[in-house]
Length: 357
Image 1 (cartoon, rainbow, N blue to C red):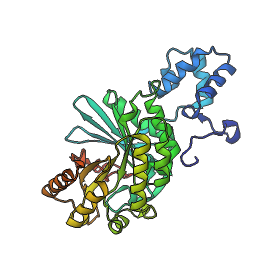
Image 2 (cartoon, helix red, strand yellow; image 1 turned 180 degrees about the vertical axis):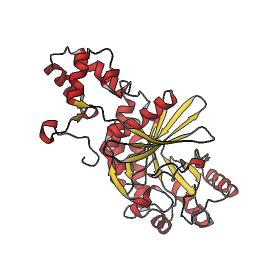
Image 3 (cartoon, rainbow, N blue to C red; image 1 turned 180 degrees about the horizontal axis):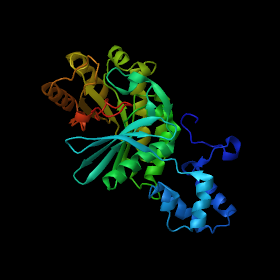
Image 4 (cartoon, rainbow, N blue to C red; image 1 turned 120 degrees about the vertical axis):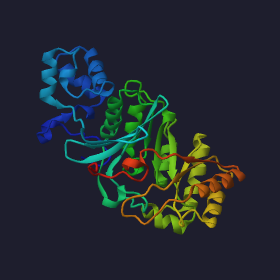
């Protein structure tokens, strides 16, 4: 499958049956019309696929059995297989899901006070190589299609039997290296005929792929943007995040100014506090200088330890120092409570592997 795109070939071209998720609304209507079906059938099928998350054609009970059989002979429903599932003491659930081609990814469901947030992956693996992240250790397998991203959310929804209220694109992969599929998934999640999640409750996190940040700023929806910053010192950031070394901090600073001017939306800077690396006095001052006078929120995260890494989290006291110092220059900062760290489901801990026994 081409990176970042849905399949656009026909089954006649390669002998494979096409996944129903890859059909546009128009293609679906055309197919049903060719089968002699009335026009309202397209909406019925569309609803089963995108809203009800049907796993088989037999579930589509308001369709004639003859039509269900006809569709089953022409199309597949893709789908994901749950390979492993872990439950955290805080109620979060981590899933290892496998797609029909054998590729697997992880996603996380996080319930809180009647709401349900889902963290999804946009790629199987990641090519960015961030030093503090487990995903990058194995490299990139492939990008996911829009429907594969969407199906993660629906799988979590069905497992919790609860409406998903927000989605963060902060799992495996760099979303902006799979831009088209990520945006298509966000639009499907936002669509009232899809998951119906408000645009401002859909957040994409990027390491700072500058050309795509400006592209994102020009999209019409009110989607939310988070930047994985982790250091405002170029040398430190180059070491921690080698995949975005070519995108300098000064250029990132400038493009974020353009983003705010264009959208009027407040971006978030994600900052994982690493003891002795990016929590020093000079690092704190650099962060204050980078954020002062900008419309930004800083999300401080105590580094989640990754197996085999020598990096260790900063202290709680140091995190509060960051909050106070940033507040002193007019920058709002919060220390984020990591969810699911006991099952390696917190930020930076996702990787493609089976649950440990």
